[in-house]
Length: 137
Image (cartoon, rainbow, N blue to C red; front, side, top):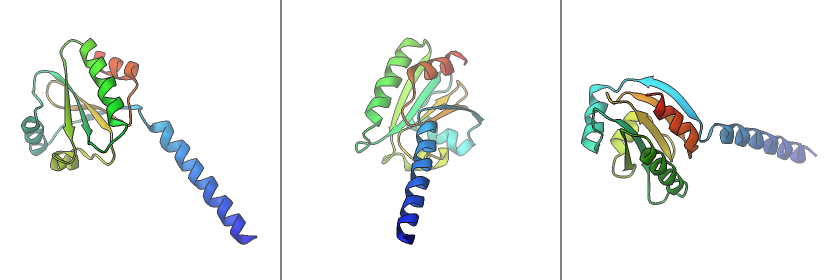
């Protein structure tokens, strides 16, 4: 009887955690994190260019949802004038991923023309949310 009670408690806790985690996935979180000089140097070395709004997304060959992010970001960036896309493989850019606090894939950042982080998205972003974030810059 105690074993069944523990099993039910674990299942309920796991389900609650999963629901909370899924509700946050793909949601745009607005930020205003200015990059440190070291992070800014890493961003520029990776291909980010000051002067244009950049949608940076980390991916990997082994990441299934990253293909969906690639499609969404590509579509939105094509529609928004002045926005550029920068996709980086986390396995070849671990130092920048660590500096930006990437904990899971896919992770997408919206950087303004000064390379200041304006938004962060964990998971696959919704095209409309990403488009409205870019329009606000």
